Image (cartoon, rainbow, N blue to C red; front, side, top):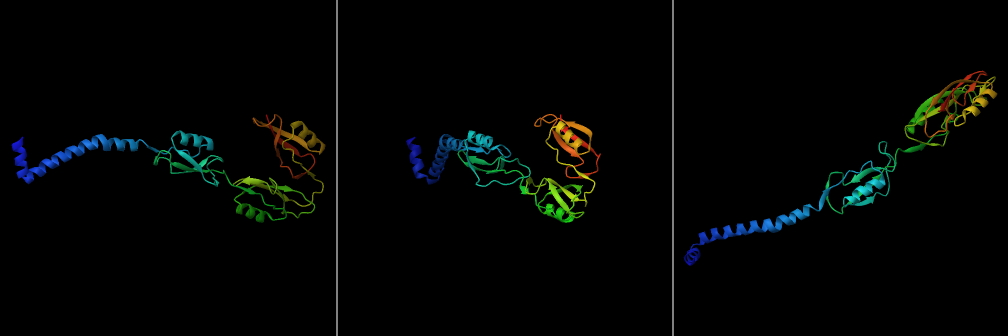
Amino acid sequence: MKRFLVYLNRSPILFAIVFWIFAIFFLAILANWVIMPAMSGQSAKTMPVPNVVDLPADSAETVLRSAGLNVKWAKDGRYSGEIEANNVLLQMPAAGRTVKRNRTILLTLSKGRQEVSIPDLRGTSQRQAEISLQRLELLLGSKIEGAHSEIPRGVVIRTEPEAGKRVRIGSKVNIVISSGNSSGKILLPNLRQMSLSRAQEIIDSLGFKVGGIITIQLEDKLPNTVLELNPKPGEYLEPGTSIDLTVAE
C-alpha cells in the first residue's frame, strides 16, 4: 500500500485518475442519499389544479381547499350564456396546471345570462319595434292584433311582457298591434294564473265561449291554474268567440 502511495505521488496522471474515480463515487453517494430525497420531497409538495369550472361556489371552494389550495374570488362576476349563475365561470391557474400547495386559485363567478329591460314600444310601427328589440338582442315573438279607438291601425299598443320588465337576452317579446276601431268587439282580458272556474265565469260574462281545455302537469303550479289562452289576452274579439285554455293538471 505504501509503495502504491509513493508511486501515486510520483505519477500525476495516475493521481488524477484515482482522484476522479473517488470524486465520482462520492457524488453518486451524495445524489442517492441527499439530492434525490430532497427532490422527491419538493415534488411531493406540488399538485395539478382540480377543475372547478361550472361548480357552485361553495363546492368549488371545498374541492380546492381539500386539495391544499387557497381560494380568492374576482371582485366582479361575468355574464355567461353557458354557465349558470353563481357557478364558477373561470379559474386561474387553469385546471391541470401543476402548482405548489397553498397556491391561491383565482375564481370568477358567473352572473348567468345578461338581462335587459323591455323598451316602451307603444306608438311605434311594427318595423321600428322589431329593430328596437334586435338592438337589445331580444327576439320578436307573436304579433297580436287588438282593437284600439285611439291608436291607429298597425301601430304598437303594448308588449308582452310589459315595458320595463327585465328579461334575459334572447327572450321572445310579443307585440300587440292596433287593428283600429273596437266597435262591436270585446277585449279579452288576461286570465293567466286564475283558477279555471274563475276564468270560465269571466269568459261567460263577456259573451265568449269556453273552447278546448288542455292540461299540462307542472309541479310548481296549483291544479286547474290557467297557464295560457288562445286567442291571446289583449285582443278584441267578436261575441261568441271560443277561448281555448291551457291549465295545470
